[in-house]
Image (cartoon, rainbow, N blue to C red; front, side):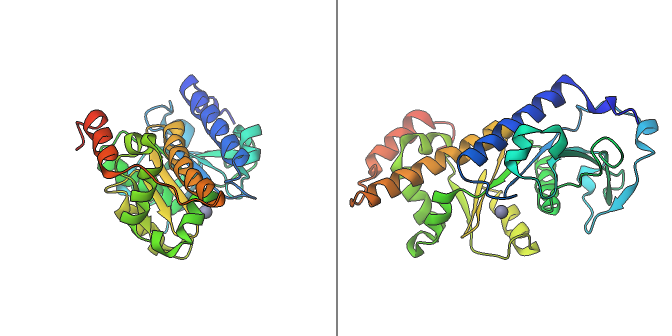
Length: 273
Ligand SMILES: [Zn+2]
């Protein structure tokens, strides 16, 4: 089957970026086995008509996503290792199109080219987030989920299982965190991974934050593109690393004080605060 409609310089760029970031996640030790997943809403960048689409079977979704009707989403495949995605992005990602009624999807990789690679098992969470971003008319098109060791470790410390406490700590560890993650992380108390409960709590937390920390599990970020989502996670991870470095050396980190933080916000975040 001719799948030339899945090839464009824009899609090439997105796929390369997914591969780059997947490699970072693996290299940082945040993507053991098949942990982590990435998706990008590429609607508007796939040139295709009904003639090409008619041959792809429709699969029913458990829940409808009417605001995503007709959307094209590029995702990491089910069971995909991030290190494999880094080396062979085309073979480890798949493109889906949400049906016109929003109640199902067509897997445009069903067939011969990629041997029926299915989208990540976290598909419902990714779709719910992309739908929320469309409704919100937000600029963010990418979603990245990964298991950041230092951030997960923080959530095993009782006093940091509180949104204010953990954000105050992360901001106090490095000026960059204050500037580039000004709204901090949204903290989601432990829920069963992949459950409806975690998806609902995540959507709620995304109303005020671009990065969500799932207690004892990992984090999820939205960004304009995949690198933007990664950068925010990376900055937060650095703050957590600095905290644990000080603790490992036997010291309680001083952290920046309120005056330092207020000065940074006043100088760099005039539009927000
Ligand atoms: Zn996970």
